[in-house]
Image (tube, rainbow, N blue to C red; front, side, top):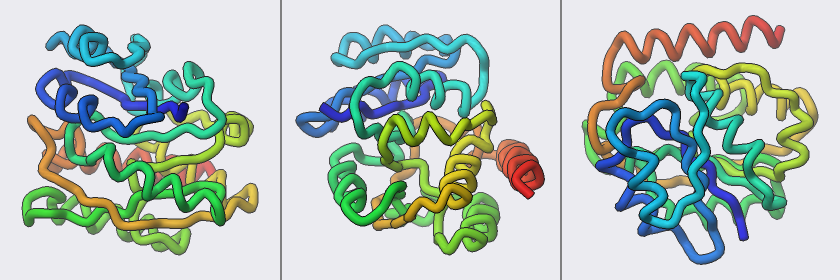
Length: 209
């Protein structure tokens, strides 16, 4: 069984589609980050393990899921239906030759990934020889814990990549489809949210110098 961590904030409308498409042999851990729409109940009704993380922040939810996971290999992905869990095996297949496997987002429609979010992401990803700081990813649990990740906001995915590189990890990417999310994004759906995410990533980069 492979644990799949899904940070969640008000994703009740998206969770049924996401959880019903979870591949066999994968166990969903939905980390509710203070939802007000009944997301936790929806997740539990669809067979997911539910973890409650009261401290707000994408990184806080991701790390709570990592701590709750018990499988040797752990995956991460968004819970907003922008990513299809059926593609997780493709990402996991990279772990034969890599220590951190990433799903490189390929938008299926023009509006799936707004330009203001895509450009900033690409500029950061290039620093590490990547094309995307992809939210669908997989790695072994114990080495991930050993990275000592500290960011609890939007910089968490970048900090994972940065520290992995510093520890000599091998990184690999494969394309995954990126769909328009269900509901409005807390980050890429607004310029303000994107700017906040960029500030978080800048803080992570500065701390890693």
